[in-house]
Amino acid sequence: MVRQCDTCSKSTSNLKRCSGCHKVWYCSTTCQKSNWVRHIFACKPRRPITTADHLALAVRNNLLPQDPQTSKDYGFECAFTAENRSNLLGLYIGLIERMGIPAKTINDWRVRGVLVEEIKAAYYKIPAEFRGGYFPWFLQNQHVLNVSSGVDSQSNDKGNAMVRRAWRFTGGAETDSLEDIRAGIASMSQHRRTCHFFYGLLLSKWHPAPSQDLWMAFGFCSCTCEEEEMYLGGRYQDLIAKCTFNEFCDAFCSSHILDLFHKNGISMNVRHLADILQNNSTLKSVWLLKQFAIRTDEESAEGCIVVNPVGVDYGFMNCKKDSEIQALKKVYRTFFERPGADPLALHDAAIHGNIFGYLGSSMKLNAKYERLMKNPYPLPLLE
Image 1: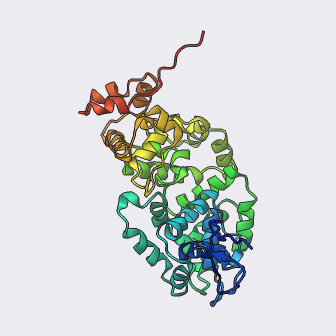
Image 2 (image 1 turned 90 degrees about the horizontal axis):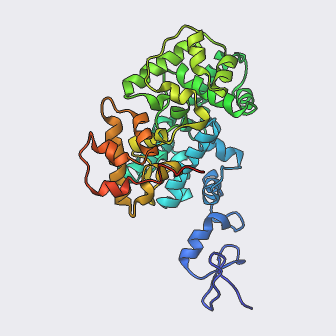
Image 3 (image 1 turned 90 degrees about the vertical axis):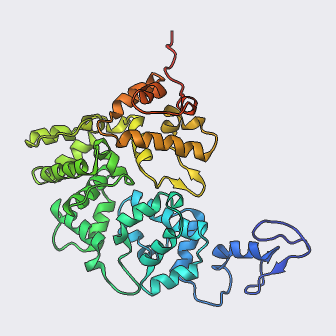
């Protein structure tokens, strides 16, 4: 009888049978360990299967956990938006798949109530440029894991408090349970869920960070510095105190938030804010470039992830190695951090195929950037 390795399907006479269930065979210890994430559920393990094992399986499948207790134990219940749940899954992928931390260890962290601290310790061992985009998000959203081993700490959980605050502010009943609130949020449209999460941030005196999609959606990417982002956050706080949640959601969905500001007598003084808020569904690629350039978390152990329009419009497609991506990214970051930098002027230079000429007029650039900054523009006119 010809047998195959249950992991790699290799046929050989040196296959070893699983000592737990005696039903599957492996060609090596490496294959056996690799498959254990899945096989533990069909085998006879010497220890109880934990929610960390379910988490590891979800990570291997690149899917959100389906087991309710796993979702609760590892923060997915408190990550109320699809974006946040995806970021949390990415954080665990880094721990389990990239760093090789076993489910048994992660379960131990959770049981001892040190999950947050150990996650941070594990990522801090990695150079900052290789930590990926999910860890910076986690540093700003640690509240999703404030529910610790066996202790019902929901009432003290900052994330739950943020959501409750937004729910009640937008018309929810004081008596609604957290489960009722979650069900209500889940039934909302995507636009309303986004606005509800934004309300939670505003009511907690926070504003979105560059690692969050809300930073783009609500125009914070147009700000020139952190102080201006705080100013914009304050204006939004004034707005939600004057308009209804329905008015805000409708304005966001129709790209008329600026009109809502004006209607409520709130003046705005953020350059280029209108370019984002009035064109939310068709953002210029320069704003994606800014988000990419000013963040250090876009790098990963497998290299930079460059959004496609940014790669084409701003020359990253010309980079032949990661060091060139990093160098080009640094040039753009330097540009955006300069006082008076005009992103729309850079956009105009890009669509006219003159990025090197535009940046070179105000920055000292090495000649190599002329090649790196080439793009397909201007496009030929169609006859």
